[in-house]
Length: 151
Image (cartoon, rainbow, N blue to C red):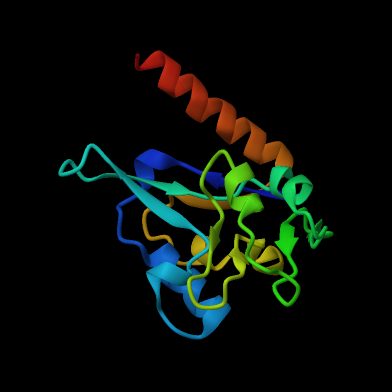
């Protein structure tokens, strides 16, 4: 099993991850149709952080139609053909990693590109990695420890 890992200090804010994500999913470049989001903090200082789905399953439990399922890759995936866009999954996500597509009215969230995340392949700063869970845990611990150390 693998996990998507974010190293915030490596994000350049270029939004290539968003563009490539939308291209893979829709065939066109659109920040609105991305399943990964860049949030700018301290506007004007150039500090950007990728916001990604951590596949925790809260949205899965919130869906009244039971159309959000965990796949073999570990990804939590929305059955877009059955989604009615009620937004309960959006409300349940503590990270803001799910939106409702303004055109299709379907929930949009990361599905890890079937185990080959496009965002990771096109991140020039190395802010995104797709690692085996054991390695991901070590990287996440190191990131957290460094944040505590810098306080």
